[in-house]
Length: 89
Image 1 (tube, one colour):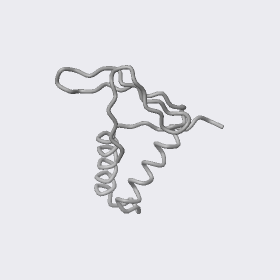
Image 2: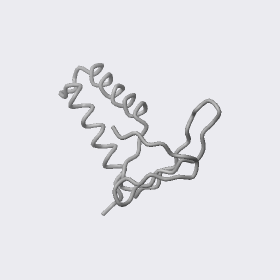
Image 3: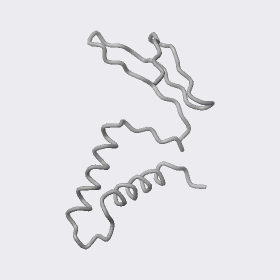
Image 4: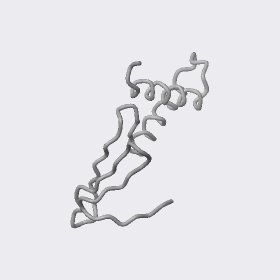
């Protein structure tokens, strides 16, 4: 893991087309980041994506007629979310 120190207004470049900007740092240490990226780049908070995956797995377990196992169901949900994030070609 790369650890960087940045001040408000400073940026971090990821690849050629993703820019993270430090927008603010509150007194309690909470950091606000701005993210500039192409629309086809999916950006999610990890805890939200984990909740979605968990809900998908629980949903798969509560429907016995579903032929997919929980891991396959979670992968299916992630693929659908990725497809929605991509712009039409």
